[in-house]
Length: 291
Image (cartoon, rainbow, N blue to C red):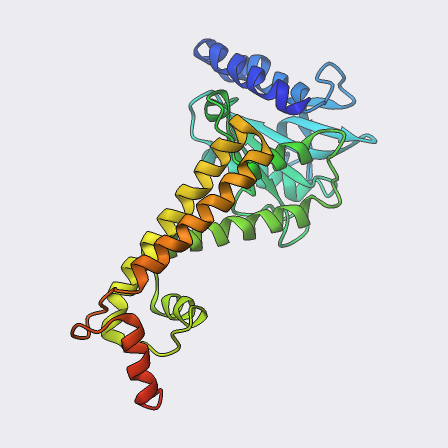
């Protein structure tokens, strides 16, 4: 049901966005419908409470635009900005509220189209510096949604949201994002240890340093080919179903394996005219001295 409603909610928000010229219209026409989409009753102040306060003292008062309540206590704090305004300006205010309300487990900053979700995965009641989930309704309206975002949206639904577990879930997502960033960096600029690890798994334990440049190029090509195959498989699955994807995937992998064998066997690696296998054999004869 969530998957069916998601495009409609995103498309409606984008169609209304030009008329949301201040914070109040942003909250009324964009943010509240989104909360309703997640299953929260935006007409019930015992569930969605506007201008909720959490104060350290009479002098230091902290308020957020909306708080999602559970058993009368805030568990989600939401800070809104006028559509198009920078969200980073509100992180300090949300962080202060987070610190003042011990029952709050998730903070949200939004301009009605872009949503940033924060938790306290490192220290209780200390909002993380980085958002564990970010979504852009403009991309969703175009049908572009990553699996991690879709999974995150499901976990934020009222029926699924678990305040006690959101910190651990956020930590997992932050680690996931970090690993993706590292892989993306390695795909663009494969490091020497990474290339050597791949070569070792491919049966080449010792490779001359001067040969690594060419192996780095091969590694970049492999990453691109892998991504292309995954994209083709995904599109094929959307059109033809899982069974056809599995069949195509096996064919793609077989063709890729044949291509790899054709490519790798004659490749010169910069040591005269010797092939990879000749270089490997030469290294064996040289008593496998490391380079």
